[in-house]
Length: 283
Image (tube, rainbow, N blue to C red; front, side, top):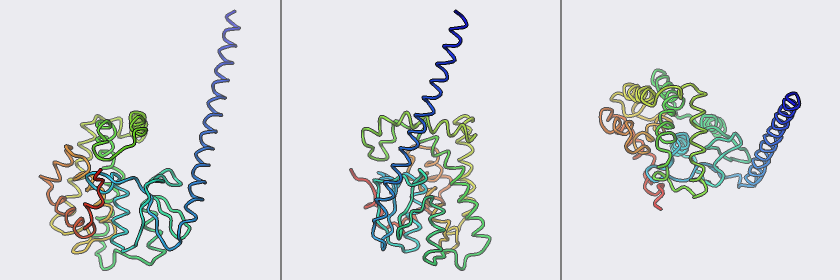
């Protein structure tokens, strides 16, 4: 009897493993099919228009995504006309933002900027000192690859249930927030930073804002008297701290001790986002 029970258990495990494999394959196939259909639809977009695909507008700043803020600011800095699409926000790589331009779909904010620079012959770094550009690049990468985990910790781990105060979320998506929060928490653990305590995560990421503040100093922009290309990304990241995380230690830092970051954001906002209020979700 014991032998039969063991064989039955092994059979069940094999069947469960096979079922898991089949379901996973089916989900991947369906996701690829969805992406293909979405891209086919956008293949028909007018070739003379750049379509910026991103998440819907936010209540306290134009986008809850620092990468979307970065790219939209770049488009304004480079004087590239664009149209906004918030229905198909996730692109072919499962990321946002992404663009459709002249029949080409490009994902990842930095790759998009490089693509448009080459395609349109744009250079926002002319006449900028190499030292300034190097500092700006280092600050951009720090904000995008390290500070962003502080944003994630605050928004999606500790305050996930209040995300609706920042943006209007459809009811079906609200039901998925706890599941999404758990997914993101596991990603943080896999990355490594999630193995630290919340206090330690905030200490690490608050230090990023101090570094950015020190690098900016008394300059108007990271490009000096005029912004450079990486200013759009730095603004996109610091704007989240200043306007996108009410009540956070990041907001308090930018409004107090690191006031040069607030003044910097106000300058960027005044120059490139004169329609800021019109870009907020007032619903």
